Length: 458
Image (cartoon, rainbow, N blue to C red; front, side, top):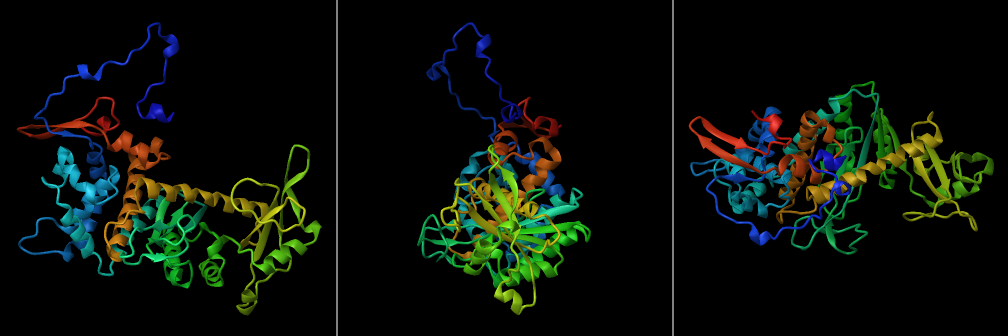
């Protein structure tokens, strides 16, 4: 299906009677042409769509004030808009943008001349003034626009962190922290919030590498939840899902006080492990059996469990324990000697939900992992352009903004491709060849007849 959608053809060798032979490439004649050529035709409909959303105007209004003078050639808003175009077509670093000057259409969209990398770096550093809130506001705005485009009764807000490994101690904010793959290497530790139903980014922060999820993130988390609540209205149920880093009293109380439900992976502390092991066998409910009828998955609400800090704050939440006979994947916690059971647990304030349903609700949070993978491999969030933390945060947010804008573009004009990742979207929608033809009435962009771009242009 994907190959057909990209214009490919399935093999039909069984209907052929003659062997296909690869031609000699030396027989192809290569000649220069004066025609202005491009390989990024998709930036035209994308640029038209994005301008219609008011993105260009918002960028100018927000940041053009940072640069002025008689000798100014490129406004800061135009530079950031150019970086977004570069991200969309696959240039996830700043330095290779200059190579796109060989592309006639990209050069035309840049105002007739692609700025040097010095201009790009300098303008990113201009934003290193403690004011990343403006690009962050645009990320949130377009993420929430995806959410508002559909009606919902229940949505899932997933919070997760990742590690951006860095190569250089001289980078501001590059510190040693939790890095399971490259232990001891300095890194950044960004955090991101997505709404699972539309896979949209509705919040993000770039943080130094030694920053864990905790009290310092509470204002940000509250802001994300309030923005989502304002977007969906008071009647929509919001379920917040966080890994074990969210099992902290400040996080639980903040979400609860904002009127949201939460399902958070519980820290398997000694007191919780003891409560799970000592729970009566009758407390466990079998929800899945193997072919021989043997229980392979059981759940229970851990009876009478209350963390000490909950008692101090006079709050009570349910803890749902799950045990499974499953040796595949990840680290497993075996609590019963001589038994095959592995255990994990969740903290929740959804007191009237079924225990197994809650556990499975959390398992669907796994969708944020491939999304972060797309950010890393498709948009290059692990590639930092400068040694300045503020400039790097702006670039991080710009990449997430590019992601949200591409999602809006695809869902509006190519809804059948909404599940495709950026690598395939670039092949089909953005990295399309074409030719610019100039005539007395203007310039025409000629595109392949069977391209998805052709129906969008007159």
